[in-house]
Structure formats: C-alpha cells, structure tokens
Amino acid sequence: MRESIRTAEHLTKEDEGAVALALAFASSIQSKLDDGAGEKLMYGPYTSLGKLLNDLGLTPQGRVSLGLAEDAPEEDEEF
Image 1 (cartoon, rainbow, N blue to C red):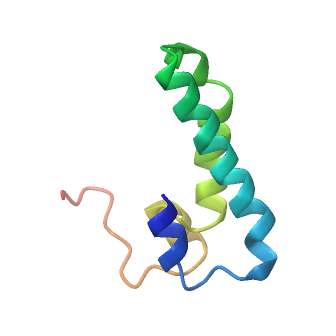
Image 2 (image 1 turned 135 degrees about the vertical axis):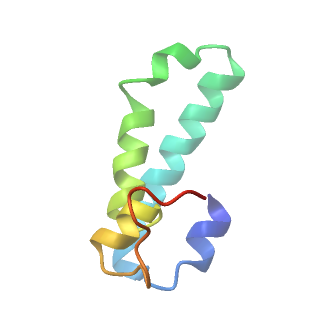
C-alpha cells in the first residue's frame, strides 16, 4: 500500500491526513491479523480502509470515480 501511495501522482499535501489515516487503519488491521483476531475486522477498520482507499483513488473503482482511469474496465471484462 505504501508503494501505491508513493506513486499516486494525483495525491497532494491536502491528502496527507487521509493518507495517514489509511496507514493507521492498515497498521491496525495487520496487528489484529497478527494476533489472530481477523474476524473482528469485517465491520471496523477493514471497511473504513476500503472506503478511504476508494476516496483517495487508490482502487480501480476509486480511480474511475475520480476520473483518473484512462480506460475503465467493462463490468464483464476478465483479468
């Protein structure tokens, strides 16, 4: 995730707070996974991290919604 953030040219200084929050969520998730408490992630940090990554344009869906995707994949398109 850090590499994605580092190379995301669309992020600006104004995004620093949201990026810091995303990194904190990711750290919290990793800590819970390491402790074997992954089942507690479904409705807390995991969901929040996904929404935040979308909002920052760090997911395919997020890039499309921000107009950053050059060619949005068709819904039926396979990888």
